[in-house]
Image (tube, rainbow over all chains, first blue to last red; front, side, top):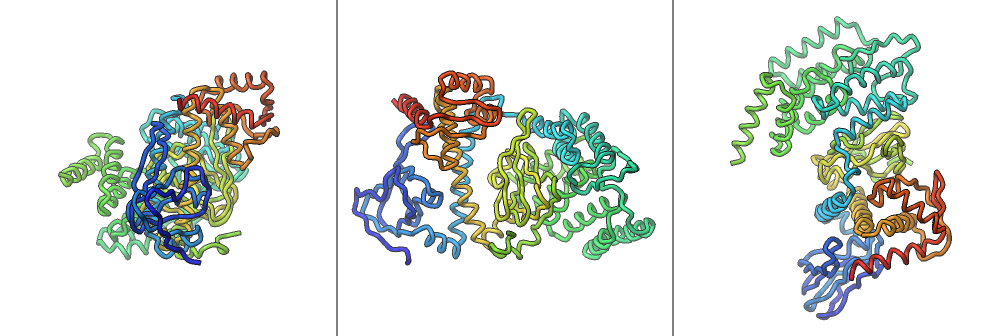
Length: 345
Length: 219
């Protein structure tokens, strides 16, 4: 079986609204229109199919009824595919799928917005409040691991938000309960504490609980050797040296710092995607990282290097909003922001 | 049951992420720019409505979730929790193209998922544009039945595992108002209301009711 070319006379109908069929069409020549009722306006709409364009895809792939009537406006030649034939063609030429994903994602975005507009207002929770409430919910329900996670996420996105102070308190609470009672379900890096309750609920330590890593002074030595490689701009060597430190197991003092330095090296090694990924992971893992603004700045610069100015600008704005005004990092970010805006014109 | 029976994903190992049982993969309301393909383990999708945690779905290996994130950085619409130890591929807009090129099967899956989402949203839109609140609630029952592939022209009684809050969410009306409508239906003996389920006595009766309201609107 292979797709076949079918000729249609002007004014004939290829399919009717309400039909159910697994055929997909590709317009080769002639003119075909799709008529349907716009769900928002209730108006009848007629779209012309472009040459080389597929139609009838959604209803065929999703096994739904046709939502439109396909009318031949001028004698046309149409390739007719069964679903398996279409899938075979698309798997050899993924651009077909990518293109359709774009079209469908636009449609989805549009209908999604239309639906949101119709929702009653009390359904639309402000995302900041919503996220905070999730942490609250889990804490109230004694699911400390999940509470910890949700509150940390809140603090990553809203470090100076409306609930930041409450969130910081709740974070300390969740950490304390977690270390005292465990989480019922193990959560992330936070190992369930032993009955001794020895694990301190240090407010500042959102780092993994200290595990008995190697000899601490050894790690310190390794760490400073690696940092000195960074200052010599030997980023690849530095990266490898840092990686070795991490391979030695978690360390309360150095793990976060090491991961931070590695992500920085990735930036200088022009591995922007990996750099973004690493810093994002760090921000999630260590939401109170003292150098969070620096981390976000590297992410922003990575996006800028990748040519995604929109994202870069978004991050710069976010960092600036974190304040304070006279912070040297903020000053650098402002400068970068100005350069970025200058670029646009 | 792992991805070994599906497409070869070894080239994507660098995108692989592990989650421990109970880990939150993402939270409702947090901005999202990643989506996931489950390789092993199950993921539960939940929403916290009021002070209740509501199960939306449980997803199995080879299923995709969080895909709305590649459309826009809108806040997540639900929370994803690892129900087992979970291994999943994490994608974002940057590595998305690589995924498409390297694995048409996943791309096709995503395409079908988008199609389903478009239809689901359109269906919701139809409910929300009804003027009459009773028709809205009745139409939610019809939508739920369609999702379960139940024939809506049947006169049989059907059980829905839905709460008043669920119904109010889908109908886009406040819970109090939804309860009033449901109580009215109870008084009319069209439904029976239980804490954990709602029994619709005659779905076809609701179908006719909704259709007549929709026709009135078209005029």
